[in-house]
Structure formats: structure tokens, C-alpha cells
Amino acid sequence: MRFLVSLVIAVLCCDNLHAQAVPDAGRFLPGPPAETSVEYIKDYLQYAWGKTMRGTELGTLAKNDFNATAPYYLDAFSKAIGVTLSSAETPYIAELFEYCMEYGNKSIKQAKSSFSFFRRPYVRFDEESLIPEQEGDYTYESSFPSREALMGWMYALLLTEICPEKQDQILSCGYQFGQASVVTGYHWDSDVQAARLLASALVVRLHDHTGVNSMINSAKSEYEKVSGVAYVSPALTEETHQYYSNDQLPDAVNYLPAPPDTVSALATTDLNKFIEGKNIRPTDEGQTAIDDVNNDLDYLLKIFSSGFGRTLSATTTPELYKLCENMYYLGDGATRSCKNYYKRPRPYKQLNEATAYPPAENIEKNIGSYPSGHASTGWLYALLLSELNPDAEEDLLARAYQYGQGRVITGYHWQSDVEAGRLVGSAVYARLHNSEEFLKQFDRVKKELDGTLGVRSVSIDTEDADVYTLGGVKVTGEPTQKGVYIQGDKKVIR
Image (cartoon, rainbow, N blue to C red; front, side, top):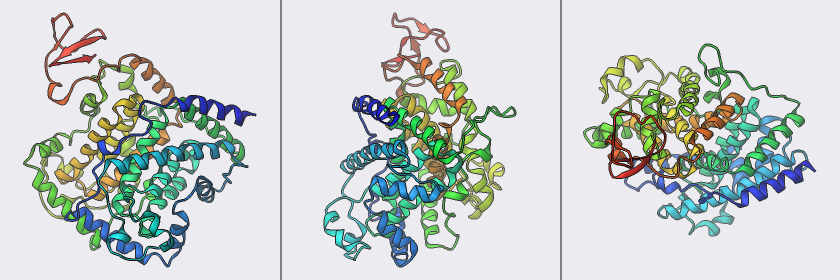
């Protein structure tokens, strides 16, 4: 009976979806790489690697993973967590998987329409894939992004909320689906990278639906019952006032691959991106990257204010500021175990070259490079702010993507560090939804913002312009009362 009630709630609430049910990947992700780019070389190298894996256990998994249904994903994650997930054993979780798969497919379809056609690897090289019997069905369908990678990472993020004590095993399983899609020859590595980021954006959008949140809560209760594990949400730590300590966060050592070895072929693509970044430094984009070396909370909220639609600060949005303070160290904190484990040298240290921002070189030169804490934190904050304001999601994620790339441009990180960092940020975002303290504060923030997001505010070029009341009176400093003002040539909400 409880399952039927939950399903009815989900259907009633979720049929009335947000104005745009899925995020538009074309507005925040780069498209498929040009065949003259270093990214395409990396794609080729990964395709070549995938072919060598076809006769292994990974090849067998890849063949099974291709075009999988929701029950298949349930079974795969069951093996990862040691608890049977199925329509019979866990109907709430099964229904959540079925429902979210629908929106995963919508996201893939929408993304393919937003980007130029990208030939699949087996088509590009006129070679046989791992699944030749299905080649005819996909020859004329663009490969970008990967459906398998999106589904795997989307389910991993959802299950991280439901089964937090198994977070590392879940994320490792979800990551594997992306690797498998490369092994089949049906997808490029760039298809996979884009799909995982799109998955994190989709999970944010799903949280905007009351029905899905109800399904997730039911799934949490169901998992506690069948697993016998009663999850206890931690209190804010006395020392740091963070929602989690570092050792309670997902451990990237356990779910991400090792960084490219210095002498590997993949390391050459990192080197080429470093060289590209150096050439960008004298440009406006390079200056933005230099500015983005700053990662304090006030700066982060400032750069996201334009996309969000209002000024975000300790003065204008105190409840939001408190929320962000309590999660400030988590994005970087979740990279620490991996940084310490691999101790990957940063580009400027390994190559003995200067960065675009020398003052931080001595501070960071002995801190591991993989994954990027900046990229993780930027992506995490964009996901959080997107859940608060789904209309602004694409703008926020586009800025977060740029924020991460700035680390490559300035010479503080390799490209693979940044790509891994964004995945760490999405894993932390999912983990935060198990914190009762976070959820309580999140509700306070929603009340603080209630009714204030109807006017999109402060474009980048007017962000520093003077502020006037609607009556034309200039405001000195930050407005002391909430309301609509004029800044530059736009109406803004303060």
C-alpha cells in the first residue's frame, strides 16, 4: 500500500514538471571535439585502449552494459553494495530507477539535438565494434554523449543519497559504465566525460520535482529496512562547523582511476592542454582564469551571482551564506585523500615553468595535483545553486566549467585533474543530501529566496554598475531593504 501511495504522489507531482524537464547540455558543456584537436587525439587513444580490453572481463561487462534497462542497473549496483535491489525486494528503489531512466533518455535525446553530429568510433574507422549485430541501429545516430555513462553516474549519485555507507562502491560501479561504453567502440571518451557531467545536472533537476524527492525518501527508508543499516546523520563538527569531516566524504581513491602516468600516451594530451593554456593567458579568458585563482567564499558567490539572478553575499542572502560556509571546505576536502595518495606533481612543478599567478606557487607546489579542488568546489557550488534556482542551472554550470578550466590555463592543474575534480564535486553534492543539518538549512535558504527569483539580474557587464531605486534615487553601498532596483540598464532583485 505504501508503495502505491508513493507512486501516485510521484505521478501527480512529476507529471507537472518544471518548464524545462531536462537541462540543456548545449548551454554549459563544450561539444564533440574537432578532429584537429588534442581532445580528439585523447579520444583516439582511449578507443585504442578499449579495443585491447574486449577480450577481458571488462569487455564482457561492456557488452552486457550496452543499452541496459533499469533492472540491469539494479542488479549491477546490487553486486556493488551487497544488497539485492529489484522490483520484488526493493520496489521503491526500482520505481525510482524506472522513472529516472525516462529522464535520462530525454536528456540524451535533448543533448544530441544540441550538438553537431559525431560519428561513432567504429563508424569513423570502419572497424567492427564489440557488438557488431547492433551496428546498423546506431550508425546514423550521434555518439555524443554516452547514454550508458549518463545512466551509470546518475544512478550512482541517487544511490549515494539512499545508501550512504556504500558510497565508494556505488560511485565506482557508476563510473565503470562509462568505461564500458568506450570498450564497445560505440562511444568516445569525450562522450563519456560529457555524459557524467550531464548526469549530475539532471540529478539536480530531478530534485526540483516534489514527487521525485518523495520517491527518494521512500527509497531511503526501504533501504534501511532491507539492509538493516540505520543511518545516523552527523552533527556539524565542533571544530570546523562543516556538514561532514573529510573521512565521511566519498573517497576518490576508491572510485576514480589513477591519474595518467608521466610516460603514458594520455599524459601527452595533458601536456598539450597545458601548452594551449599558456597561449590563452594573455587574453580576456586568461585574465578571468587568473582572477579565478581566488577561491574564497565571497568570490565564489560573486562569480555565480550573475547567473543565479541576484546578488549572493553575507549581507543580501545571509541564510545562503551560512549554508555555503558550512560546506565550503567539502569540495576540496573530498579530493585530499586522492591528492595525498597519488602525489601527482603539478604542471608548473613538473615542467619547471611559471604559472599565470606566481604568488600561490610556493603554497601549492607540494600539494598533489589530482583531482583539482578548485574544479570540485566550483562544480559543487553550481549544483547547489542550481537546485535552489533551476531556471539558472545552465548559466551556473557554464561558469563552473569555466572556473575549472582556469586551473589548466593558469598552469596549476592538468586537464585530467580538472575532469576528475568535477566528478568529485558531484559526488559531494549527492552526499550532502544525507545531512539533516544541510537539509534544514537548505529549507531556510529556500524560504529566504522565496518570491525573489522572478527577475533575472545583474549581467556580467553591469555587475559593478551603480544601484538605484525604482524612483531613481542612488543607493549607497548594498541596499538595506529587499526589493527590485535598477542596476545599469536592468531590473535586479536585492
